[in-house]
Image (tube, rainbow, N blue to C red; front, side, top):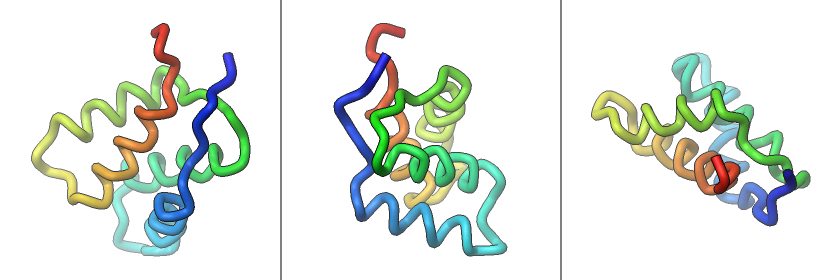
Length: 81
């Protein structure tokens, strides 16, 4: 199923910074990679990435930038799932 949403330039820039930062968590890097994979394509976020993004948003241990990436990922998920 295709998606009508793509990653915004602001989120893409944030994702790039996360990937270049050696101190970024593995979780943040996974979310950043997913966000960048949807910059020009209309791919739908996979079920596993949806689960990860949801856990990030529900947790208090992640920083605001990681939560922004998670929210972006969820906004591009399959609404029928």
